[in-house]
Length: 301
Ligand code: SAM
Image (cartoon, rainbow, N blue to C red; front, side, top):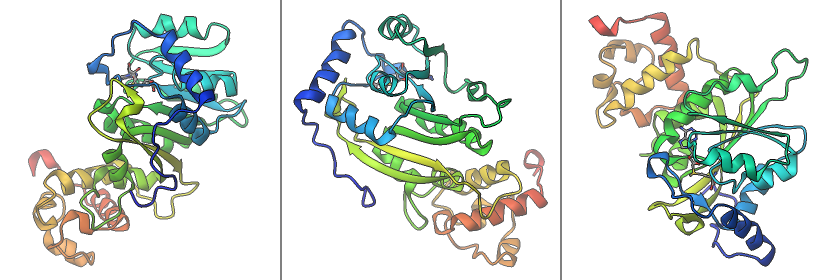
């Protein structure tokens, strides 16, 4: 990934960092990683330190971690902030987490599915200057894309300061990719519409136990302060992306047939013979606004 600032981590451990990782491992022996929860636990203290440095957690900030697992990132973040909310689906891990961090009264565990979790409850919207969310997590790869879409809805509500995620490298590439690239798609558009996407570093499989079959990467997402070219309705942007990339090898003349005619595309200054990845984010915004203004009943179209 060319725009990464940092070189790929080698996974080598320094003495000081190794002990942090070992603490994590020692504390959690006996838990069998569950594939259905996408459990690949970080065990490399050097990598854990780099991730935490990238997050740069500070006291007084409103951090929430998705999938704390056995506490690999949780521990150093809690040490830095003294307060942390976590959302974990695996109920076997909950008592371990509570025991491990019993001496932090402001460590709060929410047992459940982050896809269903209402993150607005973590922001004190009554307060004069509510602390915005800093969302972090080594995300379960099997649900990472729907989870990102779920979290982007909180960005839209302006509740998020930033997000740092460990994802499959390929997912980070899709997020960061620009038009005219094979990786450009709905994830790129919906993420870049809301956020600046900054790939931070790549991480090899050896940093995890069990080791995943794919490379991973950390990405930083910073919500735009203002969206220069806002859509009238974010749902229309999603609808247009779904139609465009459902069959990405088709020309947009075909893929938009039910939403926008070839003539209408031409009137908007868009060549109907293009493929969806040839359109820029601004084109998708224009098409979304067209669809908002000219709604089509897809059920009966
Ligand atoms: N943070 C730990 C680490 O880095 O070692 C664990 C990361 S592991 C890749 C993903 C974690 O997310 C696991 O703890 C898993 O149980 C949890 N998880 C999976 N699906 C979840 C969901 N839908 N909601 C909340 N947590 C989930």
